Length: 130
Image (cartoon, rainbow, N blue to C red; front, side):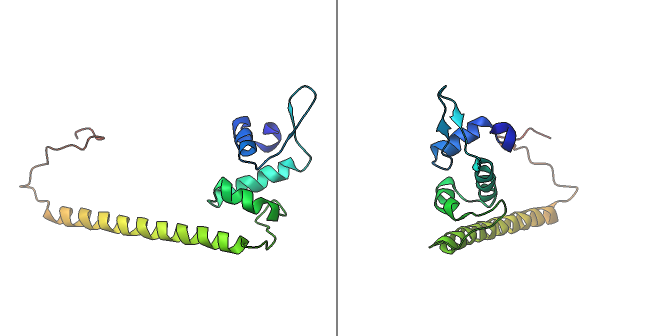
């Protein structure tokens, strides 16, 4: 399955542990995947790319109908998708505010730089002196 999907075996085992994949077991004990498992793994990967948790994917996977973003309108499906989108939008807004604040600090500090100012002698813990 790993070769067929390009997904590492440990990820497949994780999907199985999360209840997203349900392989059978052969007489030798090896996992045996149904014919539709490749499509299921593709759906899982696409939903992960959308930022959904494996718990959310477990809820939505029965609604997935194709390799792309094809979902049947199952109950509460749109609520889950909209809630995730709202969370991402809030996170993006927070990052944008942080980015602007950093720009403001940089701009204000650069305006104060003059040839007479000496460099600060402080170094942040994760930086090396210039």
